[in-house]
Amino acid sequence: MEPRLKIAIQKSGRLQEDSLRLLRECGIRVDDGKDQLRAQARNFPLDLLYLRNSDIPQYIEDGVAHAGILGENTHLEKQKDIHSVLSLGFAKCRLSVAVSKSVEYTDLQWLQGKRIATSYPNSLQAFLTENRIEAEIHEISGSVEIAPNIGLADAICDLVSSGSTLFQNGLEEKEIVLHSEANLYANKQLDPTLNGILDKLIFRIQSVLEARQHRYLLMNAPVSSVERITQILPGMKSPTVMPLAVEGWCSIHTVIPEARFWDIIDELKASGAQGILITPIEKMIL
Ligand code: AMP
Image (cartoon, rainbow, N blue to C red; front, side, top):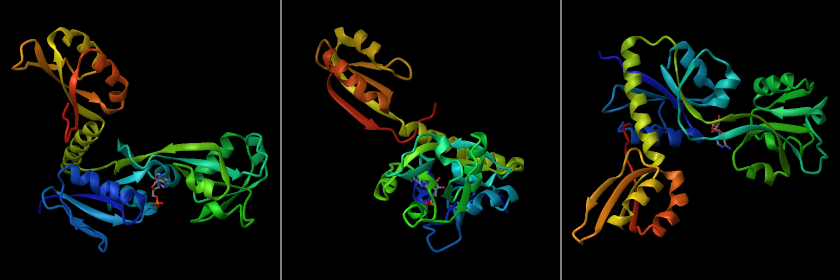
């Protein structure tokens, strides 16, 4: 039987949807795995294992899963001997210390001797040790944000992205322990065949991620403006310039980083560009 790469993803929770979407955009077809533990890809030598988020690092280290999609925060907390092969750009968040709004927090020294509730005791302990703070860590597995309100702790250390959960619970973010996003992690001793499949997967993911960060830009402009417009465009290479049926006009095509579009749009218009179109790119191979 042909070897198949076993990839662990979250059984339920925040990372699952984005992980499955990424694989779908890589052209990998898997059946919806809500009620199952394992699913086979139909058109790629890959099996998905749906596992509990916090168990994934151990499974990858043991080789039960060959690779997996995981938040960096979980990897840093579990400290298993696995390696990150690619940052995936989603599930961006930070692990932060927060205290009640009513507290007069001065600086880190305020935490000295306090009780801090968290689901990330190792990461928090490393942060406190580094900053020479001695505090009591209360490990709890969920709903950490209610701990100060019920008198369980003076502060919490939890994941934050928008900050709305903290806000709803009357808490304020004070210290950032670490930043995190989803990564693809792999076992360190994969055999060459499995490594080959992993490399193919990495290549596909990179093409999808690259495409997500770029847009295809088309516009019409007077030929006399081409030089000025070319200088404005942060393109991959020089733009494609094609004549239009109307004398003295051309069509300019290029690829730009999505984040730059709004910065340059006014300059393009001021340079005579008209009929500007911007469209998503499905895959981008550099
Ligand atoms: P969960 O589904 O809550 O078990 O979280 C799974 C993973 O999603 C965490 O380990 C983080 O990497 C990520 N995550 C959790 N909370 C957030 C958040 N507020 N914003 C973004 N990512 C998060």
